Length: 100
Image (cartoon, rainbow, N blue to C red; front, side, top):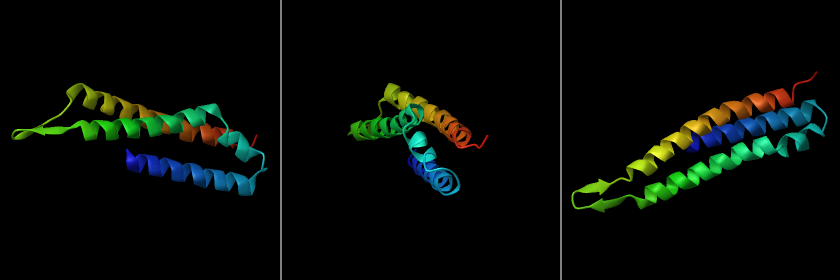
């Protein structure tokens, strides 16, 4: 999840850098202020925080660790949703800076 977030943020920054150098400076605030992009990036942060909280809640009991099964399932589902959101984010940003 962390590597996906780093990769997506670096891809967004490369796209923003390229858009600001090749196109009008007005493109940059439009991409950054888009609510869909902010929602996807917020979803990344929320998923990472949730995964960290679940990892902290794993406690040892006797000879094994007690894993919260349902919470781990939620973590997996959120991570898959983040992967789908990443694809959407890259597609939507590339459509937003396309020259007509």
